[in-house]
Structures are given as C-alpha cells and as structure tokens.
Length: 129
Image (cartoon, rainbow, N blue to C red; front, side, top):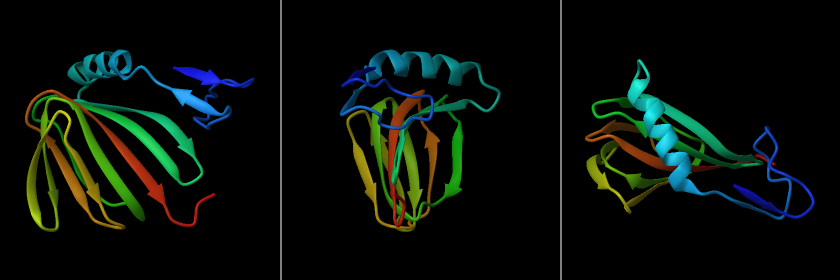
C-alpha cells in the first residue's frame, strides 16, 4: 500500500493523503491463509474507512458463511479469487473471480464459500460524513 502526498495511511483507515494504493494480491494471500486457519473459516481486513465509504477484503474457507445482514446504503461484492454463493431477496446467485454484484440500499444478503475465496465488499452509507 502506498500513499501519495505528505501523509501516510493511518491505523484509523482514513484517507489521509490524496490517494491510497493497495497491492491486493499480497493482502489476499495473507488473508486467505488466516481464513484457512481460523476456527470460523473467515477473516476480514478493512482497507478504507472514510466518511460514508468502507472497503473491506473478506476471505472465506470453503464452506464458511457470512450470515444475513444489510447496510443502510449501497453495497458491491467483487470476487477476487474462488467462488461463492450470495443470497438476496430475489434468490441465490453464484459468483466467481472477476464477478461484481451491486446491491441497492438496505438489501439483505448472506454469503457462502463454494471454494476458498476472497472478495472486496464496498459500502457507502447514507448521511455519513
């Protein structure tokens, strides 16, 4: 990860310079290793937490789940590696690496790993600054 400008990426996950850059492949490998060893089969790392924006990388071991939840804002799920199934109000949808699913404000969703997988969840809340 690199910052442009005089400031650096803070532990608060705020954008403190003009840009942030992440090398997702290195983050991804480490996170998948942690998920494989975790009792729950899952782990996550928040990359950005700034105002209404959250970007979190999630890794799941095959068979692991994220239970149903929702965000008061829009959500995207971008699969980086592996395959997963999402459940939303319309039903189940299988996603694979390079797929992106975008959910409207307040849509409930759950995720289950069909293989070891990693994905980015990007969220934008309303009314946050």
